[in-house]
Length: 344
Image (cartoon, rainbow, N blue to C red; front, side):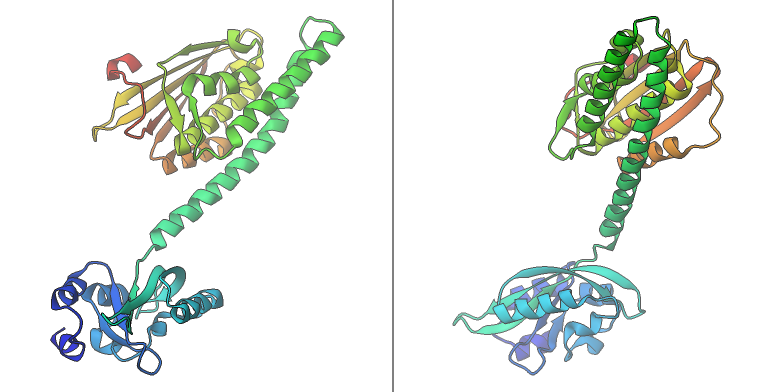
């Protein structure tokens, strides 16, 4: 550190010490020397890369690159240096032990008081965990979409057969089938959109989805819960929870018979960390005797989405009807509140 200040005395000592002790990995390269060697690296950079400072100084930072570092990323770095702009570039880098990591690299020029280019700074951030989580989320989302589209076909088939058994005229049957197909389509389209900026009340979401599946519409449902809104990842999780349970209820449970009923209760409780959590309780009544499914692809899908949303989900396959309970952590600004005793 002292050698650096002596060699580059025009850098303010306080600034140099701040950079040295920063927990953000930082380097300075000298653009006035051949191949732009690193002339300073702080402890955080050494810790991130696994290299000792003596191994770093005097060489170009490309030593972090490897076989999976894309040519586009290399070109972006060269272009940013040439243009003298501050740029953020995400690329694969490698530690000394050969371990790859996703580096969110920010580089930019440092000028002296006369406007002369003195350094190129580089800050590094390991975002591997974040990118892995995004990839897992995308895989779950893609699998969810495929699963739900396949369910649409199965549900419509059951609804058509159920309608065909109703004691109404052929014309009324065709009209009702058409109405149910439209309703199921509307429910799926409403809940398949990008939820980043969308907000629905819990009751609106429940009525739109379950009304599409219930043989008597709203008369097949008993709904009990406060007015509150859900958005973002929670909206996706709740939508999938309702779709999956409704699909199962149509094919195997209470919504597959005219007199079946679903009782759905939701509430907000205080979580252990002081935040709020949304709790659902789904109970089926009046359907055929229930046996636990041999395959759990749908329930596993919902479990995965709930886990990504920091929630939990349990199924109780009672002979008289499925009971499912879900819990999701809510954002701090979510409206609606209730005591824990109200959910029992």
